Amino acid sequence: MPTDTLSPPVVHPHDGRPPQPWAVRAAHLIPLVVLPSGLWRIALVAGLPIGAVVAGDRIRPGFGESVYIVALSLVSEGLALLSLGLVRPWGEVFARRLPLVGGRRVPPAFAVTAATAGAVALTLIWGYASWGVLVDGNDLGLPAGGFALLVAAYAPLLLWGPLLLAVTWAYHRRRSGT
Image (cartoon, rainbow, N blue to C red; front, side, top):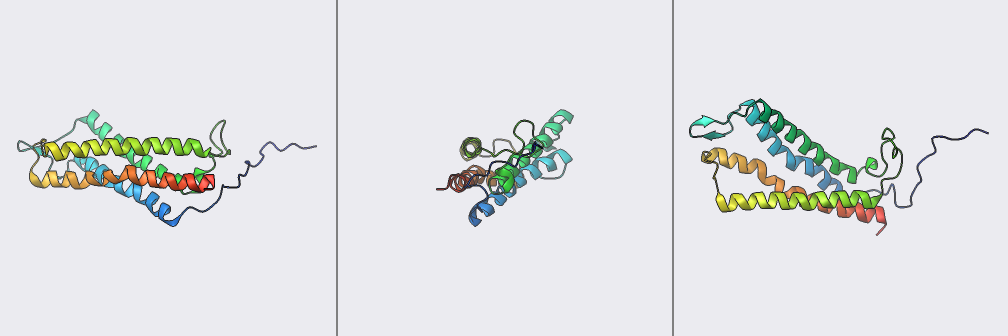
């Protein structure tokens, strides 16, 4: 009598339901609101003229700082792309290649808790940062054009937390059947 070692994952009645169209659009918008700040940081590392000038000298990060800046940009964009898991099937079942959990159902409470914590943290971080800009203004000493470009690149990050929270709420409702 053969045994089935690769049994299919347990199917839950709320799995596989399509997400709301607005949630899909919002999830796709998240990586786009994170992109400008990453591009600004990479342009800084590349030495492009983005107005990052203090006392007449262009800001030039050292090698270690450059590695950190590029890594920060890649990790930020990668985390933003994770929001797509809240509207795609791979957000309902762990990838088979993952040890111990591969092929199993993603517990909705796990995904909702992690995404909610991230959304709250992002809202607080970027809210605090924007408050600092409102209160202190251009305390970096950048020329007006460079500061305007910096603000334009970072202002969309204010949407990251609220968008993630909205998509998380839609995921919760879809996966819990409410």
